[in-house]
Image (cartoon, rainbow over all chains, first blue to last red; front, side, top):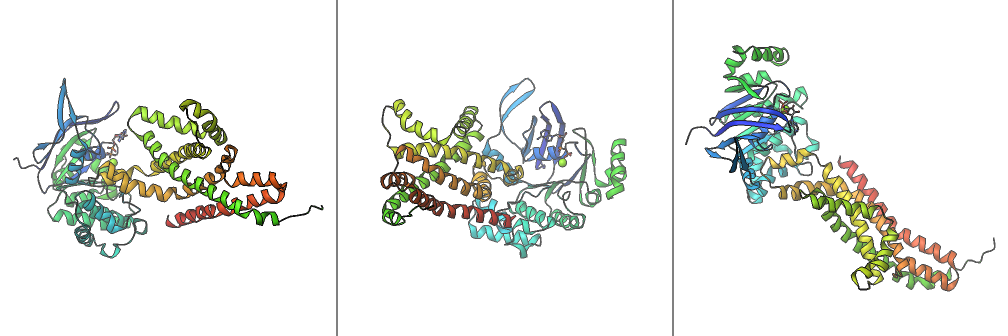
Amino acid sequence: MKNHILKVEGLTKSFGTNQVLKGIDLDIAPGERIAIIGGSGSGKSTFLRCLNFMETLTTGAIYLDGTRIGRVVGKDGDKESVVYSPRTLCDVRKRVGMVFQQFNLFPHMSVLQNVMEGLVTVLGKSKGEARQIAEAELTKVALHEKLDAFPSQLSGGQQQRVAIARAIAMSPEILLFDEPTSSLDPELVGEVLRTINTLGEEGRTMLLVTHELGFAYRFATRVLFLYDGKIHEQGTAEEIFKNPQSERTRAFIARSSEFSL
Amino acid sequence: MNYQWDFGIIWSSMPVFGRGIVVTIELTLICLVLGLILGMLLSLAQMSRVRALQVAGRSFVEFFRNIPALIQLIWFFYAFPILIGAQLSPFTAAVLGITLNTGAYCAEIYRSGIQSIARGQWEGARAIGMSDKAIFRRIILPQVFDRMLPAFTNRAVEVAKITSLASVLSVHDLMYQGRLLSATYYRPLEILTAVGILYLCIIYPLSFASMMAERHLARKR
Ligand SMILES: Nc1ncnc2c1ncn2[C@@H]1O[C@H](COP(=O)(O)OP(=O)(O)O)[C@@H](O)[C@H]1O
Ligand SMILES: [Mg+2]
């Protein structure tokens, strides 16, 4: 077994004739915290969504713990045809959690029910056990006083923390964050970033798409700069932010820093 | 105006009205329940991945929503039996006609309800590994029912009204009894007025429920 937990090989993704991802390779080791930065429309969300198969890959392969996801059923020239069964996708998503920009909480369920839902319907835990886990996770994100509230009664920051609790309750091996603070009022960004930071300190493997470059600098063990559907440059936070090799990376960081570094 | 009102006729006809009311309520409930089920199936067909099912569901809905309900009822009573080679009872023909009509309208309520649930709800649920079936049952449907409650109670009001058409097939509902009584006693003014008021008594509670459902929903937002 290699020591990577997730491996991406030759990933491309097209929407119709628009090729958004143009060949991405990436090895992720356990405990890595990877920040993905890049201009809007550069394919950051699409890349993240391919990792838990919210989007299906056009070509390429993803390995979880050394096992390829999907079944190759044939080859047409260079292009493999791969079948992803619903069962497989559900299994992958149990292991690769995701937090969205828009939270996507279930509005008809209380905070506690939101977090319990996956534990009961996906992992098959008893109500009692699910409740225990959900309460513990909600305590971790400092929302133990809001168990019976409904999402509409919470601030954006609180809703995003519920969404984080919902994701980590499933004990995923990897967590994906797609601009988790971009739809929050500025004064609520801090509480969510602190929560994400705490998860990082626990040694969780995480990928974070963000425009908060200051946070990315402090948080990430590795930074990827995405440009034109490719990983244009990558390195440690120090390397990318303080000493970028590419002129394009430098320009992007200079432009963004006016707002957030 | 020197019309001699005779309200006595109404009191003495009450047992007959009563029988009509029972039939009207029966017809309403049966058609509403069957229509809700049919509508669900039709909306699922329209949203399925199978193209033939989509087309069939869509055609059915457009067909039954765009033909007057009265023609549907009469068709099922007089024309349909020729096709199947067996006579339908007036009640069965009425149930068929009204149910198909109601199903077509309910399908639209479900479809717009399900589509109004944002894509994010599917994604949020998929991201924790829920199957499509579980998502539909646990996440989408409960929200559809919540949102669609006013539309469904409105439909119930419509169904209760439409059942009065069944009297032309001589289903013994409230309208039929009213027409029969007024022809028998030559007292259309008293009797048909009473029939109207009795319909009001059956239907107004439904309208009221619909109004309350809307308010309840507005408060929840
Ligand atoms: N579902 C989709 N259908 C068609 N095009 C899409 C879809 N999702 C994303 N795209 C396109 O892919 C490109 C990259 O989008 P995205 O990954 O959201 O970028 P980013 O997150 O970096 O801003 C954009 O040009 C966008 O229009
Ligand atoms: Mg994005």
